[in-house]
Length: 302
Image (cartoon, rainbow, N blue to C red; front, top):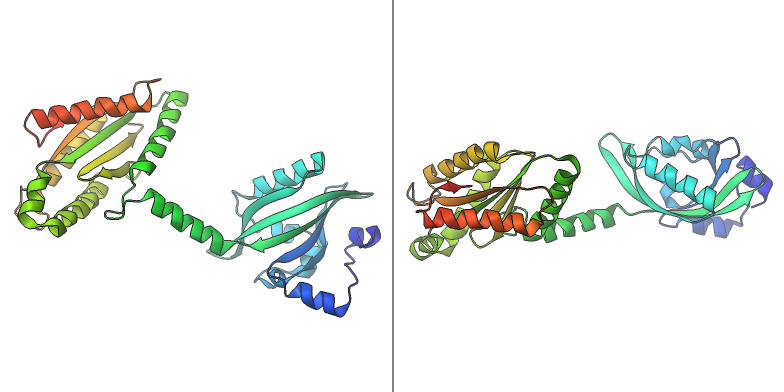
């Protein structure tokens, strides 16, 4: 493309076969121009992606806002920062963003572009590809890696990552944080008496009860076997203890598909002390859980 065409949005003059080929590409080949006055537009667009609902190629050739205004509100500032960084330092743009196509619908787009100087601003040559299916698959794999198969709760890996985040927040802002460790009492007896399938059902039902009693902001995880943990953000010990007692009582009163009162839990509670390592907090909660077992089970110790 000549610089004159690039600046006016005149587009490339291409042989018919080449144009037919580019229109079939699974994405968008583009040139993007930002003028000295800040005005942005797409002098050239080709590829099957230009046929997405709500995308008007002619409008984008005149004003890039036709697309930019459709960006997800969280992604817009990141893309604009990437454009500015590329223009200032003459480095490629490599980013991804979500674009809204209709109410409640959006698509993920990966963008790669190389800048070059032009007399009237900066011109980028690049490619945009729809990666919605790839992002959905990555999200599914993350859920699998972070989720306990049986109960659907967070697993140990997810719990540790979340606990690190909450501890970091506590150390920055001085907000309280409590950790609850839960262990089913005499769970081996449940498996031996009613069978492992019933034992699994007890664990599933316990997860459901925890979700019902605890708050939306709390993170509940299965650590393994019959042991669970709950992260209680912005919650001091004086507030987490009544919550733990309510959970313990609800579990003790629930039937779980067998005789009521057969399933009880012991709970250990500890409040985070600013500056202490994560493992020290877990160890203190674990000592409280051990004390609850030693004192007769079916109780909360903090």
